[in-house]
Length: 317
Image (cartoon, rainbow, N blue to C red; front, side):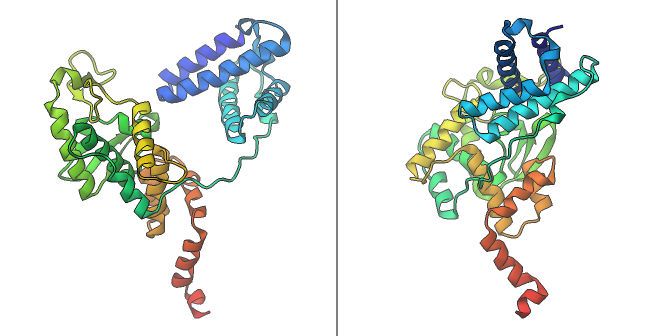
């Protein structure tokens, strides 16, 4: 089998056996396609004729160097290397490669950048930008409120159904990476914003908002998307990203804002208020605490103040 066919098998394995999200599968598909095309040029053959044995340490290093020459960031190169490592490990498990050549390749050192986050005044300005007199404005307000109140990912927010929201208990059921579910609380203002947009959602024609739970059979109970576009369909990630960025521009937020920036802001403000890092990890849906620990680097000045106020010997001095 050629490398291109092996990569297709790997993508199917991710979808069917690892329950990988569509976003993850698309990213791996793009990364592996670029790698196979690079090897085709390197060996002077069509991408469809690149053999599995062409996946070696020199080929991986050359691919990473080509990314650097094209101006790709270190983070982008590191992500592609992670995809190649997962692919190579799969080929070893399947007996198509004797060993994993990516183990001989060091990961590019990532730039140490602090996640973007807003202060409280900026958050208030962003959330208050939508026009509450219009259904779209009420929907956008609920989206912004929920992002900041819960710290959900963009993909998680667009995947929410009405049935996932418990207004009386002020909690939302989120389906995260790998299909893992978690319950995340939200505040009173978010509950009010959701209640307002739910009245608009339920006023839409029922058939426009329905979908059936994937893999549950033809008789599965229909579910209803929480956030809808003007045609009554589920909002896409691109549409929600545009809503957040437009709100940031209207609120004159320096440097703009993405949905991920609101997620960072949520985690940062919890940490600054003294929340336990394990609690933040659970709320964000991080599989590893090390992913959450980067927030400890956000505001070293605040952390020093907490340390001086809390540590017995620091108080003495």
